[in-house]
Amino acid sequence: CEEMAASGAADLWSNANRADAAHPYLVRKALEPFGIRQSGNALLVPMVDAGFRLWNVQRIRPDGFKLFLREGRTAGLFWPHGVHMLDGRPSDGPLVIGEGFATMAAVHHATGHGVVAAMSARNLETVARAMRKLFPCRTLIVAADDDCHLSENVGLQAAQRAAESIGALLATPLPLGPETRSADSGTDFADIAPAEVAARIAQAGRAGHA
Image 1 (tube, one colour):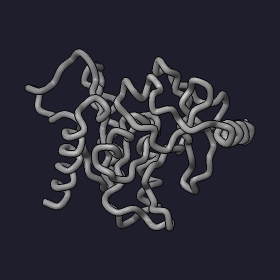
Image 2 (cartoon, rainbow, N blue to C red; image 1 turned 135 degrees about the vertical axis):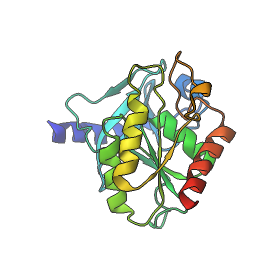
Image 3 (cartoon, rainbow, N blue to C red; image 1 turned 180 degrees about the horizontal axis):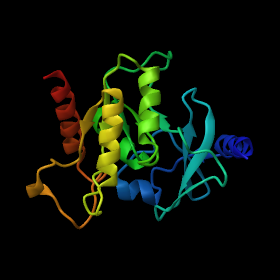
Image 4 (cartoon, helix red, strand yellow; image 1 turned 90 degrees about the horizontal axis):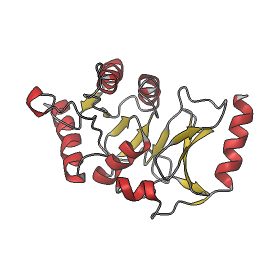
């Protein structure tokens, strides 16, 4: 079933068009269509394994509803952008790992760093470990989703575990002091201004060199 889904993903991807920068989801998130395509009204986010083979695509509807291909593989897959240069060498600077496409596209937009989206909190540590194997000497930063509105902060806990498992740095979209917290909603790097994204990622990098 996973192989069939992979074949379907390849067909969908190869027949897709360039993503429309005016797609409602991209406009709402203030994102450029980095490394994605479009089929009908759905954005297509490619999901690859550590060998960069396409196995699945995430479809994002104009209202933001997201779907993977039925019976398609998701474990260990990720969306990469700017990870390598055109000649195949690793891109300069740190590699930033996080959960969703929008979150990591926002990080790339703000910093220019290579990024990887694990597509879910539970997949984050698996993908982080794969990145450490691919880039044993590279500075890796895990960009957390801050699910402070939930009884259990799933995003932050998953990011902390992933960072600890590979000796990576941790970046959060908001300072972790209680005085800045809001229980109304969670926050990720797509929710804050690009200058603040760049500052938070840079702060994590400086902490790693302190």
